[in-house]
Figure (cartoon, rainbow, N blue to C red):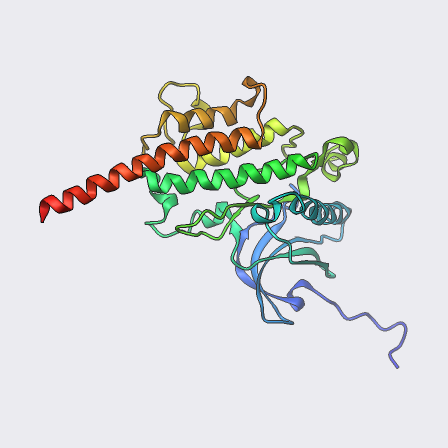
Length: 305
């Protein structure tokens, strides 16, 4: 019989999972940011994506525990909203090891900030000058708007919409963006009890968003960054592009929607229905433009023949 005083065998994250060598999203303990990494479940040999908070052996671990629990609760709540399961990242499992708190996600997703850096040169994210490629951009925005609608519909402010909270498989022909990162969500009716709000009273944790409008503004920044627009100069008649990014001939409706997201306070109502309706109007314009381009291409080939 094992002695009662014998030291318990360690059960670490790396004993449960074989971790990849490269992070999909690097951790930052001071900012309470988790790590995201590809891994293999040693029990089943299934590939997964892990999001985890490494324990530090300090009081910070109590904060990590609250954020980990909060992430699981809010993800489940938002995915229960109509269509939420289609536009929100699925949490397959969760657990606590001796050295980390973690959640398990499908193996094919990655934070957008990572996925967008490693797509092929001919991927739509690298060629947004064409109407067909921008159709995929705006269809993905539509998915993110629906996801925010699910978040807000549950009385939650997401709080950290950015390239780490948006997930993608890197699909080349299918819109697939999903929202994750629910550890920073704030429930409007219980603001004073939200983990991030409580933590922020005692230590700096970076920017904290407390309003639906700021969620939409953050979403606008995600789209502006993908296009390459200078988000600080959206008021200019000809919005400049970030140095080094190719200039895109955007339609007026596209620019107007980006401005709407960045300056939501100018409108009486800004919600998922408003944004998706505006996206649908843009898609109609781009579909017509793509059809016209295809007609010109076919006519050109017939003339050459």
